[in-house]
Length: 268
Image 1 (spheres, helix red, strand yellow):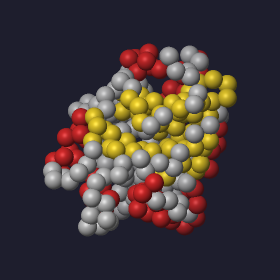
Image 2 (cartoon, one colour):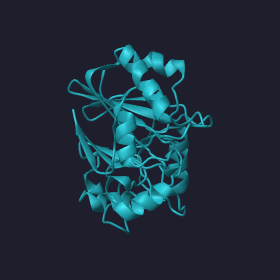
Image 3 (tube, helix red, strand yellow):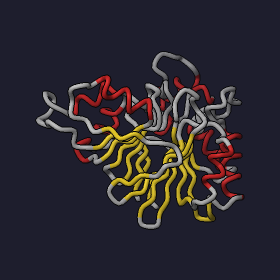
């Protein structure tokens, strides 16, 4: 499997939309890996994970085509992951497509919001449920319950294909015991996990800072969910985390965790 991190920023991106904090000023001046668009990923060139407001820019930057997608899978309904109005540009009159060429998967919030937004459009939406696997082509996809929003079934996503297993875990705090218990039956080759709050101690249980992220990873290593060759990479970084990319490399490196960056390509 090939995973491309199209965006690795939190809701406000880096540099932030309006703020003039130190991390944003540094990113504006030096660019590179310190510039972060809102989080999303692409699996094997055709399974899109989340649709942030920066999606067109991400496709243009990496010379990709949404026309190659076979699926669009949402983790939850926050605006930085679910820019639902962008979906309209798939269909006529913006293209010659009369039917949605990819399947949309999402939780209860997503499944209700899309038909409401596009009541007369030919869009195939399939509802997903935490801890219930489904198949897309030759992939087995299993949502697990994130610890992020209590008013919807926020999900992290396990992808399995040809003996390889990848977990995309953005927008979650420390999982509840039910999720940790469920993961004991899996062996992950790659974990992409959020580290929204960076070097700033998190005050919200729905996100992780460096210390909490390292704690989750260590628990997975101790239980053998992560094996000796598993790779761990972070995403969903906020400027409020008070960390440049080099700071994250130094601090996360202590725990054998790599900070992700926009355009990063991972293969397992």
